[in-house]
Length: 131
Image (cartoon, rainbow, N blue to C red; front, side, top):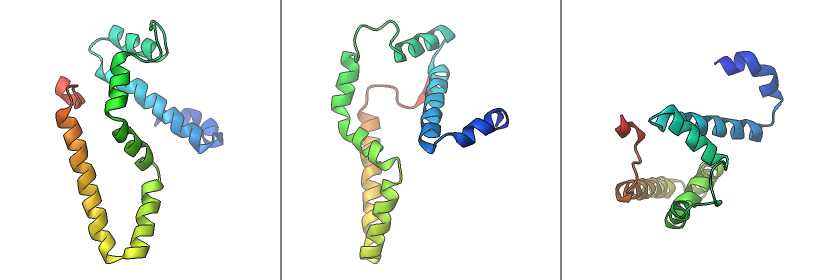
């Protein structure tokens, strides 16, 4: 709320892509502070995110997760924008009644796949369990 009061003139002049990137960065920084047990740990994580105190671009753990969950990342990237809505509209126009069943089955399959990834993961995926 305060950002609109203080920075509305500048926010309105920025392209939509820049606003999306700024929102992403602010959300990530907020998540680091929310998920870290101490303030020093949070600043350490932020430093690592900026490349301070690391020896390589990606750790072995990061490469493992990227190679293990690449399909999830591709789905997340493709479906986070308006692409899914456009595809869904075209499917509904082409197939009408059958599309309702097909889209419903697709959404159930994606939900089952996400639950399977969460259950099989060894990392703590639900942040509120930490509290």
